[in-house]
Length: 303
Image (tube, rainbow, N blue to C red):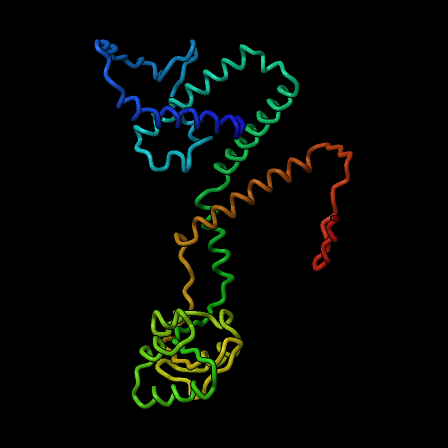
């Protein structure tokens, strides 16, 4: 189903929803009609019949997969079911109207139908391959392999005060050594907005995460130590106070499970496509583009 069709059907249902309050405020007729008798849902799971076409829960599930997401995220289960049922009913009505106009016999319809059929077949195949090969055991195997390759890395937690000049930094160091509170001065004097909010606390970081001058000074210090001299970087002059040192923790399997699952899914699906290519006879009459060499300048765009 095209995006245009989905938008039109959604717009139609939205129009009905917006019209409901106005209808409710309309003057009541002089002789109100008797309420329609309640319909009993068929026992065989049919949710609706549209000109003889039966609509079941599986049809609603397919619609939700197609148009769900944000459209139904905030709905209650009852609202979602009603929304999807109305959508499928309207979709079926519109499809019937299209058939009556022989849209299916128009140019390119069969080719588009083949394309979307192939797309659905591929999606189903990839999902089946994923269910078969993306297993708990395989994900844990990848986790254990990567964990064994990780070298323990030290990280530190530090606070800093950032100012514009060396003289100002030296004066602040003297105040702190004289008993002034580091965090208070950071909030009052630091140019770093984060330092103003949290007393200069940078949290834990590794050596590679900071500019070299700052990292060298911080990792040479011990917990509780204040830098003896200001440290210059591209951002200005820093006063550093080291709070803690520790070995960087390796994330648990549960913390990275989602990332591993995504990685394994992509790898499994790519392997399948590559295997199909290698086993098939493909005649390509348009030469594939060559990937640019690493570091090559991009081609100059034409005006």
